[in-house]
Length: 278
Length: 185
Image (cartoon, rainbow over all chains, first blue to last red; front, top):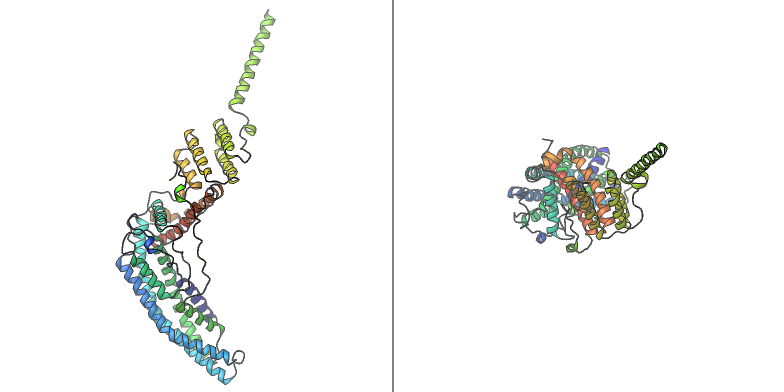
């Protein structure tokens, strides 16, 4: 029970992290490359790694999709057969065992897919780390860094900016696809808003990597527990939570997404400029 | 004759002492009365009074006067207040009450979008990351000052929104950058 609960908790947290959709609001066309200072955060190698991570995520989703559908159907049957609170019934026990088998299958697939996913995420994270360290950590002073950020804001225009570390119910593979599209469409040109995007992706990758590692450990324990439970033919709320968590990774999460309010309208050109202005 | 002379001498001494006392009072008035912070809702009048007081012996209370002016300006928020504070700080610099750098930093802390907490000439990895949490605390305090200066005094919601957004982005980018920089070099 405890192990399942932990897997469930971690999966839920992982889901939350994996389903950030903060790239939807970025207007690619609004980003002007001509005035920004030169920073190279996304060379071709990093782009390729992001694309590869998206492909691995897609494969994981495809592999899990069939078993998730089956789990849904079995759970539905269990409910419709009024098995809840009637666990001693032989028919219900049979459905519960089938459900448990599907659950084990799902854990197996996750267990097989996660190492590759982890490797891809770690590789992307490591490459981004090097670029961020060089381009933002060593080349920029704190003052020039904030000028870069302020510059990107004026280039993007009012109200058109990425929602930071938000969630929008997006599939994992779609999210990586958006990362890729966003960065690739800038055409390798100078683009200072990429500083924020790079920071966001990098931090996300760091957390994701850590949670994947922990999830892998917990899946081993959850598998063992479920193998033991098979002899009793019962399903637990925790098992349902894990399935729900994995579904959220596959199909996106429906958490409420609260976008940041756009900046208030105002005549920018009429702003007072003091001789003391920095 | 001698007696008359003695009276005259005593009178002159007394007059001299009185003049001295009065002159001393003129240049160094008792602080209780002379360094009274301005009252009332009128910012221009408050600035005039502050200028007079700060020029005549109350310069050690510059910070209190400035804070009082901010507080008075909150009562009548309008874009023109920015110019009033800018002029006041320029005047303070010209009078030698503040250095040019202090005047600039004070103005920008309250009325600028950029953060004076991020002033620095060395790289982010070298200068900011070893004291990242302290820098963020300073920025946090500065954001509160910008809220007062831009929002409550100047009614400039747009600039405050930009400052607030800059804070969020700087926090995110600094977090990632300092993570990438690794342990202090």
